Image (cartoon, rainbow, N blue to C red; front, side, top):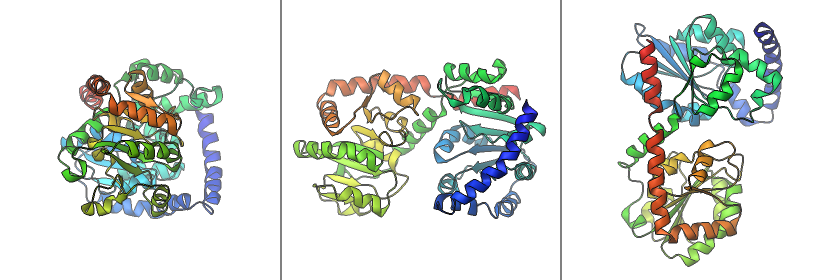
Length: 422
């Protein structure tokens, strides 16, 4: 059956590429995704000339920036050993562009499209001894080639919902041929392990290691303590609510409630961090405001504005350290963003109802430290209650301490486990 799937996949891949290219005529993101790969191998060869050929190479692949953040705690352990060349690849331009100067990798590259000849050439150029994949971004030809060349492959932060379409009969058969390639799979939970066993993986090759996202946000929160983004004159004696990765759909469900709170709470400061801080998006926000606001790029001119709008990227996780309450965006859009980023600061985390993509958001609700609202009125009453109830916020703080204490250490467990195997 595996041979049949390989044939089918390699028949349909060129057809899908043609569809992809056609859609690119009308979609700038797809056009750019194809454009940046035109000189991929020439750029890769130039980068590989600069690495130490006497050292083995470990390759880490992530689809995008979010997945790469999960990869970093483990990657940096290998980098710090000074025994390996570290190669990092991305599929998405957003991941590559944001991390192309990442200091703990020797080579950073795009992944080629998954045509058999391109993936084979890519593997032969890099010559990896080990390859790590994070979560979902699994390319069949690439995995089959690595298996054929006897390269050790590992999947970290593996997760699979009970309702995953991958478990449907025909799709499941295809994924059996993919998941069986891995030498080891490190899952987030026991339930993930149970579901991945459906792909006929040897149970001895599946280890429940936990989620490296806890490690990453915890480490970044420690770094944030040494980074000052807001002066004391801005934050002193303020109750601060931060709206992280906020989409227009999110704003439609909290902005009116926020206005009411600002009228009632004279010390309340709102910091809005748009998901995409473009001029157009910021204009959409400011046109609906009736309180004084200031853009972060002008923060040196701050004179008691009630709303700060962040018009730069890369500041959110550090900003959360100032919050008394945090809203996490995407929860009225396509799916919630990372709830652990604010939760690591031991504060109440609130969000909309679209959380099916996040086991962590569900966990926070179960533990009484995460809260859902559905509209402006519910937002108003929820935030007012959390601001007024000091005992409740203290209970939330203690519970979040317990949650992080129990979950930090996944990267260390994976690293030590593989160290013993070697």
